[in-house]
Length: 161
Image 1 (tube, rainbow, N blue to C red):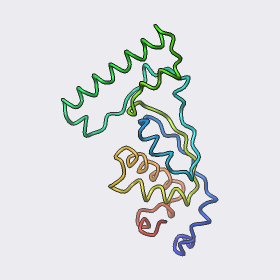
Image 2: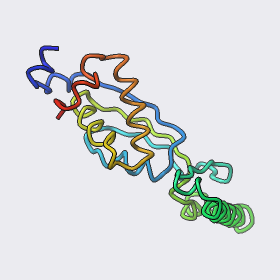
Image 3: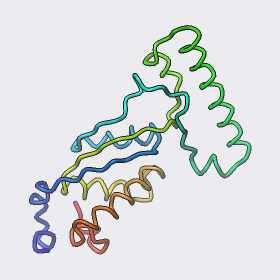
Image 4: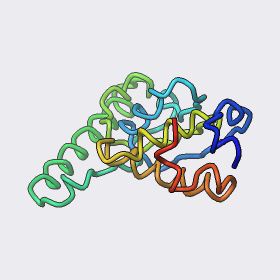
């Protein structure tokens, strides 16, 4: 409490948080890794077979049947071409993955210290943040509050870095 009140955030660099973040789009994963103060392990697309991977549909697309249909058709097309390249033409999965869209699901392990987590949450829970990373950040915030309730208490967000 004292360190929060004094805005002495350096001590929070000695607290490490590790999050397993799954079921997010590759686009969201790309947003995550822009925070260079964290350490990441992202599921490789190089050796993983992508044909059965899910895709994340943004609410703006999901709410409109025409947009949803366009996304579904695009999804079917890249999957068919991926299967054709890998199974018929012997293209390595690491090369066929170039067909995969940013909406394809991925999994990321993220390790970040407390000070940088405060900064990350301040930026990524903001209403201007991408919808998907905002959802992830809010879930991370809830988990961090369970472990360090005073540091991550909502009433202190204005005092964060």
